[in-house]
Length: 105
Image (tube, rainbow, N blue to C red):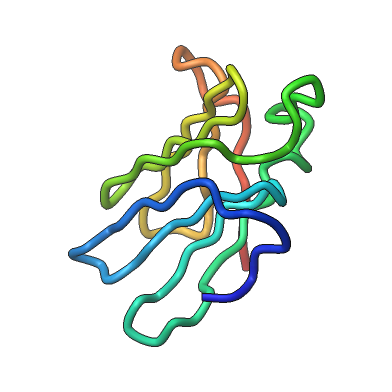
C-alpha cells in the first residue's frame, strides 16, 4: 500500500468492510480497500485549522475505528470523526459538539 510520504505510525482494520486505515508522519489518514490495494480516501487532518496542533507536529500517532467512527490523535490532542453513507465526515474536537464537517465529492 503506497501513498504515505513519511513513516506510518498506526493501522486500524475494518475487517467486515475489507478496509484499512493508516496514519503517518506526513499528517494524513488514508483509507485503503484491502481487496484491490487501492487508496480510497486521504484526510489531511493538519490542514484544517480546527484540528491543527503545530506545537505537536502534524503526524498521526494513533487510530481507532469501527464501521461508522474514526478517532485519530497526534501528540496530546485527539480528534473524533464520524461518517455514514453520505459524502460528509463530521469532526469533533470537543466531544460536546460538532466542530465542522468535511465534504468529499
